Image (cartoon, rainbow, N blue to C red; front, side, top):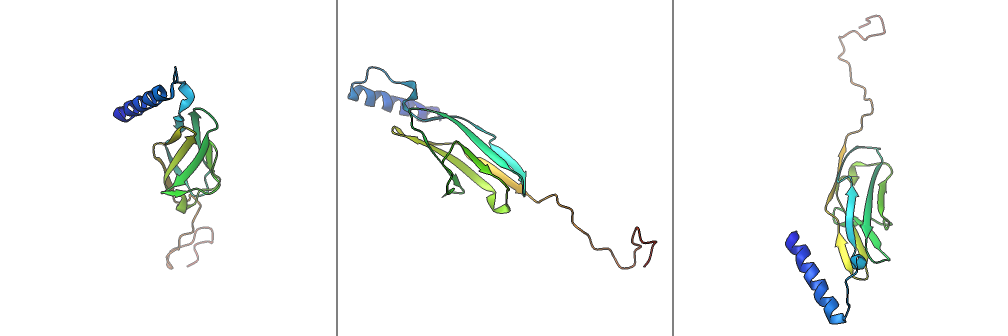
Length: 136
């Protein structure tokens, strides 16, 4: 990771020298600073929110992907899943883009567990049923 960042910085400095820029502005590239949390362990029906803090020369454009496919309509700093479904489990990425390039976040994981809703269990035939005076 450090080698990649160093190579990118050297490339930017080289490009700036060719273009005659005297200084490199800190905001010339989009940079994802923080996404929280990196992993969600949610139940069916839970609300999940990822928020990205990014900086760079504007305008910044955001997009999100889920298991390698674009999340339709997700073009903001946050991704909200109002009510998690089992099909929402998997890996999410945030892409940030400006006129200088595009970078993506580290993978964000969503694990979806079964709902905690109450389920009825069948009662064996020859056992007393509580609340009914032990009728068999």
